[in-house]
Image (cartoon, rainbow, N blue to C red; front, side, top):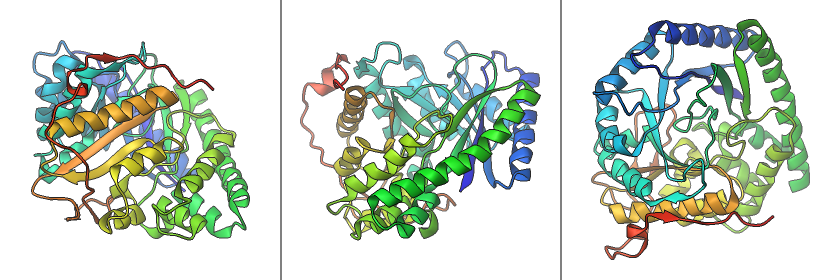
Length: 398
């Protein structure tokens, strides 16, 4: 298990408060060293702000300035937080002008829980426009959010609650699931083994976090102990699932295996924040990417599994000519599932210009595996969803 990110949360001041960002960076480096001394590999430190500032006269310049300051103070990536509707059209420009800036859009209103049709359409347009940045890679830095609360340390979803500075830990822990799946005698044994390993590692993480919070006077939000993968077999959630089912991912039993691993996280005892689930980012997992290239996965299946485990649709490679209407319908699906199940979900969709379903996918990026473009059903006809302003759904009764 590794620490994917130590994410520091702070408010965004206008004009930018350099000393405040310097303090956040100094804390991040202190935390990185403290965890390294405790035997953890820390991959990144990240800065999450509260929101993209609507009053700023030049949001593109603001994004460049934030990125410059964040990098000067040791942060690899910075999230500007959720963009208000008026700024969504500017996000592609902001991504094109930067390399480490992330941003999001709420497609479910955080206060009311209502699906926001205008935000859905705005997010779909961002995805279409950002697909022209770096051959589709630009959409790595954008996600549509549904029921995602502040304090989540995974990017792009991370944003601040507006209070005092805080930090949280995001794990890269799919290897724990691989170990548990191969060592277990049955599903129940895999569940027990994974839960015990999570609790053991979480105890070590919390011990360091409590010392940092006391010494540095910074709030500790908790751990997002999601089973995030890395593109090797030893850290592949797809490999763990296939070890449980004995079948290629997508075969019967895959959903039950995913639910088992996710429930182990749910029953483990640790201070939790964020998703705390099983992540299925297609391009970040070597087995998921391979099964996508083989045509064994489809978008509907991935969303179905999110009902019992995942974070939604993450790093999903789509045909470059996917229409805005199809993206709108996919985002409505994610929002509806999130509202009905009252669980956090995101959509990070990556249309790839010039590529069609089944085409090979390769990015020169350490966190991505080679995969294939997924097919997605979508015609040119227009239905009621494209005109819908708001959708009032009730969460499913427990």
